Amino acid sequence: MEFKIESGDPTTLKTPCLILGVFEQAELSGPAAAIDKASGGYLSDVLRKGDMDGETGRTLMLYGAPGVGCERVLLVGCGKRKEFDRRGYRKALAAAVNLLVDTHIDAALCTLPALDPAGMTPYQAVREAVTACADTLYRYDRTKQEKKKPRPTLKQFAVRVAREGDAETARQAVRHGAVIAQGIDLAKDLSNLPGNLCTPGYLAERAIGLGRDYPALRVEVLEEKDMASLGMGALLSVSRGSRQPAKLILMEYRGGAEGAKPVVLVGKGLTFDAGGISLKPSSDMDEMKFDMCGGASVFGAMLCALELALPLNLIGVVPASENLPDGDANKPGDIVTSLSGQTIEILNTDAEGRLILCDALTYCERFDPEVVIDMATLTGAVMVGLGRRVSGYFTTDDELAKQISDAGEKSGDRTWRLPLWDEYQQELDSNFADIANIGSRWGGALTAACFLARFTKNYVWAHLDIAGVANKTGPKKGATGRPVPLLADFLLTKSGISLE
Image 1: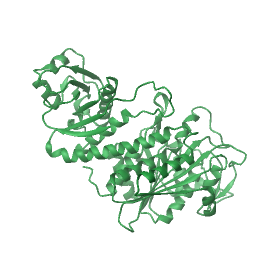
Image 2: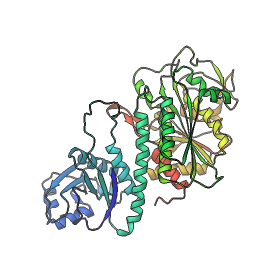
Image 3: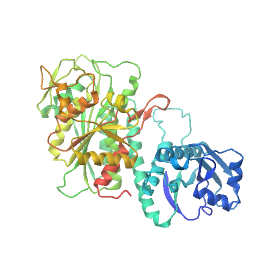
Image 4: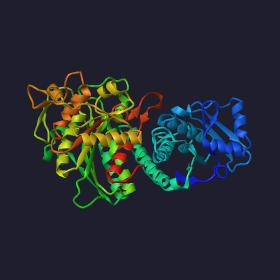
């Protein structure tokens, strides 16, 4: 897929399809008004017939508009002009791209970024056009023999900028957007694979393959014997119930100054979670293949850093395992010793993500990190509190909190900060070990974060609970690739790259 920038008079631009915005009450956007004037009122005549009312996401394809250079005109509804924001903008983009695919058009020129969606800079509007297009085009068909729909024929998607002076910013936005889309697609591909294919070993192989493709990436995979010699009793206790050996995947990119402290991203890599002895209900258990979306997002973020050659040091850590019931699996009441030396009473074997993460987070101390951020589909409780729109995040560092929040707002991959207060720590008290792996039924996302906090006292750290946003359910079931957009913005900003 090729993304490019065009500028100049929209009436003279040559393209198989020109995408124009129309607001409610048949209000033409600026580029649409220019086309209408050049065509002698052709668009106005069509709108007066009532075929397009400007409702967000409505589309109308027109042919043979006189006096213009394009072969087709695609009108896209953008809703009320005063209410046109990122949400409406993205919906309009998706509707346009879907129609392009349905009509087998191979190239198009989009003018929607020039409509100045509320709350978005020109850079953000152009980048969003690229990522939204890629998201709409994404198809998972690796495990399908017969494809219900042919793969999209759209090969080129151009974005028009109104002013020549905006072209350089737009080119950077296109470049960033295309790379972020690659990272999102990688995260989706890994997450959508079934658990019998995407095993811990498969994730390790993909990391090794990434290292072969990008010489700047050094990959190391710790096997179970390596983890046992280190004392990772918490992580290894989870994999005991599986025939698939656990892996600790380490991906190191040194693009920054020699000796500069690295940013470390840690992603939960539970390639399938049946709950262990504390077995999950059978309904929707197939979706537990998405319990490795945190790990997949680390892969996606690493790909973004490599493709853009970001000037920073970055380390990706993915503890990978399965959580299944077996004669040697964790039992409620078992006590294991973590890499930190803290003992953990396992009251619920389905609270396993924190067990593999805590050892990985302790391991991160050896990198002397500037900051550590972990991503995990950790709790259903975060969905009860926040729904499926935003990620909940936790940190005691206000500066890091602002950086995460800003990255979420700029990328549209939004977050909400939740409390990480000492009052919640007592929920994890155990009569038999240093810490229990679950608290009471109340505030489950908070006590899970408090559990992880006990293993991150030696560096600046944040935890993202992405259980609500990592995948969709129902007819559109599948991975979203989040929080790759947030992580990409965070890393770009850390690299000193302007996103305005």
